[in-house]
Length: 154
Ligand code: CTP
Ligand code: ZN
Image 1 (tube, rainbow, N blue to C red):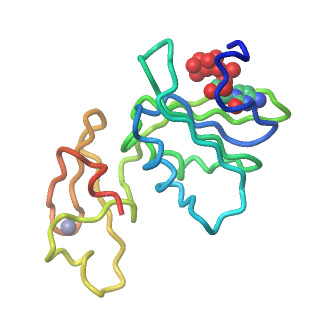
Image 2: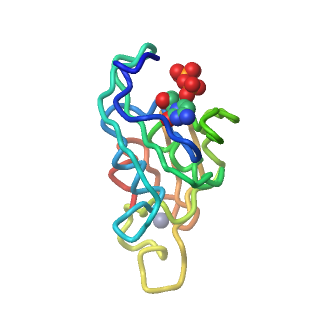
């Protein structure tokens, strides 16, 4: 990639989440729990021209190597996402996101009467029925989420 095309500078150390579907970067940031309380340096690029797809989003988190379970939740909204671990400017590891079999806490059950939506100390949990397109089923009430998963992310 030449500098002319580089919207956000290279990072020295950290994690680059690349090939996020255009428009989904802010959801990725939300899933990672990145908000006004964090101190890491975070760069978000949206609608960047891409060779493989027409456009993509990119999120770079400096000085933090994200845990794989953290990153796997990103597969809910970025099934083509790649996770690059950067050390001393080099990509030392590159992995595709991989949706785990169960998703805890990230998604809210659409069933208002579900026990995971009450005051009980129960965290939401969904079984992944299908990876692409993503289909989920609540382990408590069996309610399915078969489309627009991102609308159900807490
Ligand atoms: N990157 C970065 N800082 C670095 C090295 C890489 O921010 N020091 C970013 C690149 O800008 C790119 C991603 O990390 O968005 C992956 O880098 P690289 O593997 O070099 O790019 P590609 O070969 O284009 O990756 P892919 O094959 O996954 O498209
Ligand atoms: Zn439920």
